[in-house]
Length: 89
Image (cartoon, rainbow, N blue to C red):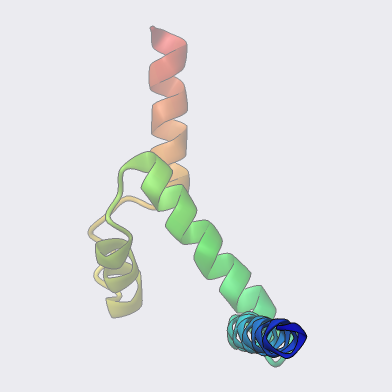
C-alpha cells in the first residue's frame, strides 16, 4: 500500500514538472531577443489596442499604412476627432 502511494506521488511530481516546462517554453516563446524587438512588439501591441478601442480594423489599418495608400485616417486624427465631438456635446 505504501509503495502504491509513493508511485502515485512520483507520477504527480513528474506531471507537474512537465507542466512547468511547457509553461516555461510558452513564456520564452513570447519574449523578444533584442531591445529593438521589444520596442517594436510594444509599439505594435499599442497600435492594435488603440485601433480596437476606436473601432478600427487593425489589419486594414496596418495594410493601409504599410502599403502607403494612406486612405484611412491616422489613429491620432481619429482620437482628436472623437475628442472634439465629445466637447461639442
